[in-house]
Structure formats: structure tokens, C-alpha cells
Image 1 (cartoon, rainbow, N blue to C red):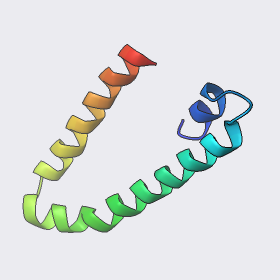
Image 2 (cartoon, rainbow, N blue to C red):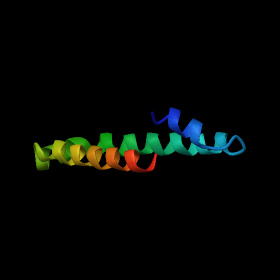
Image 3 (cartoon, one colour):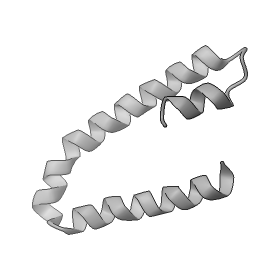
Amino acid sequence: LSWLVPSEIFPMKIRPTGQSISVAVNFATTFVLSQTFLTMLCHFKFATFLFYAAWIAIMTIFVALFL
């Protein structure tokens, strides 16, 4: 979805730039999450999964309301 949605919501004039920024932010976020996951898991144990589950729930509500 992170590749499909931005390619559909940007107007044709700015689509390449918008898609590039979207992909760059996606890669940066994935890098940060992969670098911090093990540290969070060691410190917070099972609460790490609850943290990510809460973000998924929040983002699901956001997408349902605004997209």
C-alpha cells in the first residue's frame, strides 16, 4: 500500500516528486524501526508488541476516517 496509494493520490504534475518523497520516507522509517526494535524488545519485552499494535490501531482509524 505504501507504493500504491501515493501513486494514486498525487496529481500528474507532481506525482514523480511525491512518489519519490513517499518512498524515501518509507525506507527511512523502516530503517529506524529495524534499528530500534531489538533494543525496545530487550527493555520493554512484550510491551513492544503492544506499542506497535496500538500504532496499527491508531493508523487504521486514521485511514478509515480520512482516506
